[in-house]
Length: 132
Ligand SMILES: [Zn+2]
Image (cartoon, protein in one colour):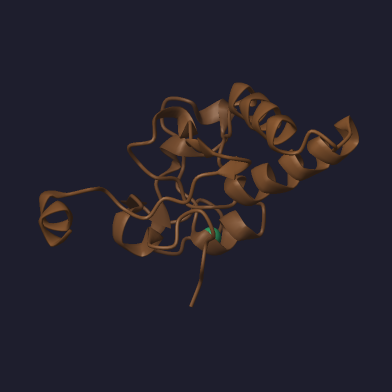
């Protein structure tokens, strides 16, 4: 079974588009609204998870978010030089760009936790609060 580090429960919460994947036609495919398709801005096509993993589509991770992660990494690892920080941020961002988007995270602005993007473990709903 597919596992995504930043969104382990994607099958329950990702948004799928009934029209199918723009590349291979597979259904279900991830809704394209959060994907990086500049030329289709008004109605971005959907992409299946395999094509997301294969880099035919990627999630648009804002540059300002990558810069914020770089600052957090620099603060957590003051001994790292600029190249180490840049390589680390590029690798984490590449993984996040190939993770199904969480629909309510506007513009893919993932929270940052210490020196990495946060793992999305689901919405905090009333039942979960009552369980605690
Ligand atoms: Zn596909």
